[in-house]
Image 1: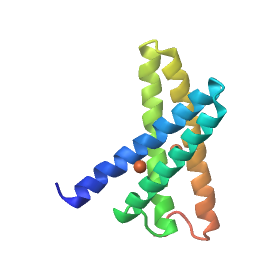
Image 2: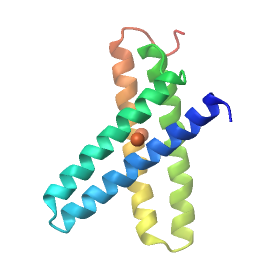
Image 3: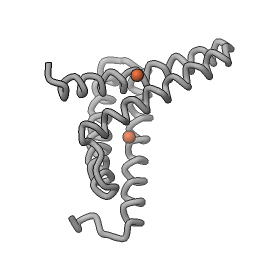
Image 4: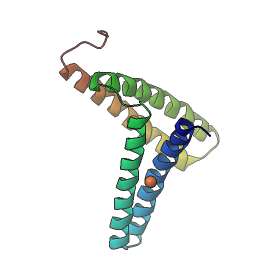
Length: 129
Ligand SMILES: [Fe+2]
Ligand SMILES: [Fe+2]
């Protein structure tokens, strides 16, 4: 396997680990294991740094304006995907999934609005490539 392919897989794996460690940290906190929760959160942050480094090495990080425009497109897609997913979860009667798709859809919308706001602070219009 080529190094770049391995790096792409590693990036995905690190990103996956961030979510798992964060979820497990929350679980440990819910169980009252605060020290373990804190440790797992620290590992999640370490994994985030690993993922970030691979993202940079893979050329996924550009100048800030380009990054924001890329992530804006990403958030627009994420909001749309969550809306679709929420409909499917509702139709299938999965109330828990429906509720969280709805909540995260609103989060994605907020992320989108926040990115638009910071882009405007860069002093250039959205259409000025
Ligand atoms: Fe890692
Ligand atoms: Fe988002």
